[in-house]
Length: 483
Image 1 (cartoon, rainbow, N blue to C red):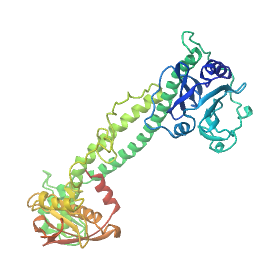
Image 2 (spheres, rainbow, N blue to C red):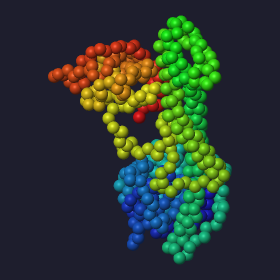
Image 3 (cartoon, rainbow, N blue to C red):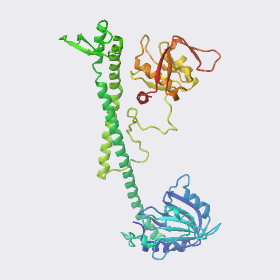
């Protein structure tokens, strides 16, 4: 609890004779709810500490300097403007109350600094010579500009006039009462700070458990969906062997399953709206999604489950009351990024370096997609990084990014990869606002620079076109696979 009326009377009686006539040389605000007046009395410099922190509100002379922020807080700036250099004319306690007034003479004339060490909301107020409130710390805002009135004790029924524990003054100290108050509240402030840290960490961990739990559920659903495609490579190979037997419009075909030693017959469902080759490609594409899920989603799920277990273990420690904050400067060893695999904690943005040129994505089939960010990068991507068999994309008839899909020599691009790359070409073009448009694509070897034109200007031959819309689901999936 805060100082009692008797303790305030004792400390004011101790410091008033020394501070009366002293000059306020400097003003500090070490925390949001406390100020320090560095005063010069005859033959000595004294640090007067005034705190408005609930439960530990007090005033006394400090025995040591406190660390201060590099940039002064607003209330500190106001005090420096008005009372730095002022002379302390008197230090007075309102009779039988927890209110102390410092009467001052500043450049602008007489003024007062009031320390209300009362109630659940202690405060510090600066009054002008007309007793009107100029500024306040941790007090009611409506008081600003109003005449100051001492708070009624009837409005503070919860206050106690007796301290919970007696002060034990150290007679060997020049200011024994101040030193006893300082010693008592140092330990109490540490306890309060630890409780606040514990409560903040508790809220943070609960939030992380909720968020990471949702991520685990989402990744599990993705894996379960992809797991249905586990045997689709088998279906694709069987269709490939029987492609000549499939007629357009069939909804299934019965084939001999030569993967089974018993050689049973197997009915394979078909999409009647697709060609035989389209059904074949569809099974292989879905199988590739299964492979991508095993390669990418499973590690992310394992990392999310590990993070969730750590958060739950930390929650147990916090709720048991044995939690302690990590030492300052200790990096948290495991931080889960909701979009990527588990990583070490990211560096500050000012120190983080971009991982190479170009925007980088991965298609649904696991193929790398590169997107230029400007004209220089467009030219570098197409003509320096690009290889002849790579697939090149650009929005038709509109300024935008060059998009390149890395392909192995002689390979054909999967349909989903083409649509992913075309979507990115539309997204990073002037057609983005319309949400739809035509995108051309061709092999890199059919793209040529245009002489005496600005960087990134090209001519294209043997191009194909695809009409795409900015599908939100596809964009979210691409974003999760960005690097």
